Length: 413
Ligand code: GLV
Ligand code: MN
Ligand code: MN
Ligand code: MN
Image (cartoon, rainbow, N blue to C red; front, side, top):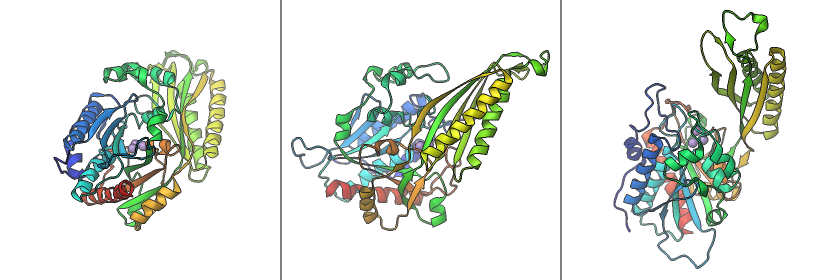
């Protein structure tokens, strides 16, 4: 079936501006399987089907929209599929580009290739991955990790969100069968290359005055859930000496993380989420949950920082009469993207600089298994995971052209 529609990525992004608007935080909150993300998934399917792409949702909730090769594939031929795409879920209060830009650009690139009269000799799939941000269930890139078999499906089914809903229940409510999540080596074995386009989440392209870059590496990163338990009590009636206040211990964790990351060149340490229970102004808390996000190019440096902060937290907890548990939710070593694929992309896009990134991506998970590359599109503010994240419409169009150029090369040679 031929193309029935032609829209640029800017127009596609404009269509979803009203979905998942967060009036409290600003920006967008589109957690996986929320009404907003489900609306985006439906939007994607409709836009893909309009283009005559065949849409399928796999057992892990990854949507695949297929543009089949116009030449019959050799029987039994493997490693012949080219995949592009990104994610539609967002962090709380995020922008409209982190994720959707790669999805919209992929659809627009199909339009461009058809407009150019390109005849692919191998299939293209546009993929949409669920829970890239890990904003709802804690583990980033959950869809690609399930696909790759690097997380335990039983553990994933049991993950719970802030409202107490399990992944199993949330995915069932989204129309998926949680019994089907897990590794899919056969699907991966069919993929020759994955190229994800993403808005840049820093100022690299602004500094270089270029619209589009190729990815070099993703720095190592991980998440740790720290739970500190103390003793709830009255803020006025409890003498200071008698307190077992987990908030005091949490403050030490946060201070120590700042100190340790500052001591290591170019390390990043963040506590962006703290839950104080029960959370009353005149109540000494009974427990604190906080989440540490730590990143560095050297994965061992990440582990050393976390070890020191954990030791400092334990000490502070002893002094306060509190107890601490630290659970590693995820750890992703440094990813160097496939050099030969990058050389091939660079030959197509000779002006594109190569940039490393401190942000995680499904491409980073899949890079362990299949040749993977990324394109970044300039973000004038350099900010991301905030409503300030943006991209100029000319740069979005340049990104689509670049993606189309790369896909044309991969699909026809
Ligand atoms: C996701 O965008 C991350 O890098 O945490
Ligand atoms: Mn992203
Ligand atoms: Mn993100
Ligand atoms: Mn990301």
